[in-house]
Length: 355
Image (cartoon, rainbow, N blue to C red; front, side):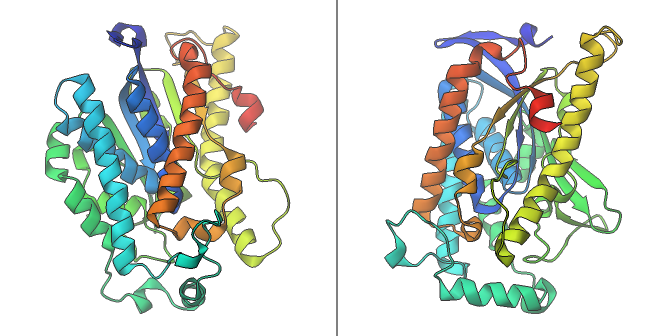
C-alpha cells in the first residue's frame, strides 16, 4: 500500500511516513530538531501528522512551510525547515518581551538551562499555585496567539493543507478528546491543544471549552491509522517514559505525575496496536480486515530526564538551539539505524516498550 507512493530522490528511495508529535512546553524544540533532520535527509515523504501542544505548533508550522515550498520536494523541505527556524526564533523573541520565566544571564554556559535560580520564576511559581489564569490574566492575553498568527496563514492552510493534519485537545466538560483536522485548523485549535490550565484560560471553540490535548492524547495515533495510507508511524517523544529514581521534591513529583498522565493515552494506544498486530501475525485476523501498523520511535529519555523541570518554561534562544541540536542528533541515529526498516517492519518492540 505504502510502496505505491514511493519515489526516487537523489539520496535514495523516498518513503511515506506519518508523524506523531508529543507536547512538552519549550522542550518541543527537541521535536524541531528531529523534523529539521528528517526534512534535510529528503528520503521521507510526510503524509500525515498527529500532534499535541508544542507538537501541534511544530505541526502547523511544518505544514505551512511545506505549503509555501510549492510542488518541488527540495524547495518544500527547505521552506519547512526555514519556517520552523523562524517560528522558534519568534518564540524566543516573544519570551524576551513578555515571559516572566527568564533564564538569568549569569547562568549562561552552565548547561543547566533551569530557571530555579531566577527570582521571577520563583515568584511566578508561587502565583500559579494560588491564583488561576482567570484571576491573574483576566483579559486572557496569550503571546502565543500573536506568534502563530504572524507565522502561519491559517486560511491558506485550511484550504490547501499539503498533509493530513490532526491536532489533539481535551474537552474540559466531557473529558473527551477533540481532533481538529486540517479542514478546521485555526489559531484557536492550536492554542486549545497547548492550553495548560494553570497558565491559560480554557479556549472556547463553537461553544465548547478545551484544555491541553496531552490529557486525552499525547498525541493520538488513531487518526493516522484511519486516514493515512502509510503504515509507518514515527513517534517523536518529549516526555520521558522511563525516568530513573523516585522524585522527592514537590516540583519533581508534580512533573512526574504529569509525565505519567501525558504518556498514558499513548501507551494505551500502543497496547491496542500490539494486540491487533499479534492477531494479524498469528493469522487470527486477515490482513485485509485490519491494518498492521509499523511503529518507530525517536526519543532520548536520558537526555530529556536530565533537564530541569523548570526548563520547560525556558524560551532562551541558546536553550532552544541546544534542544534542536539534541533532536537532530537523535534523528540522525534513528535514520542510520532504521531507514531500511521503514515500510518493512517496526523498528521498536512495541510489547517490550509499552506493555
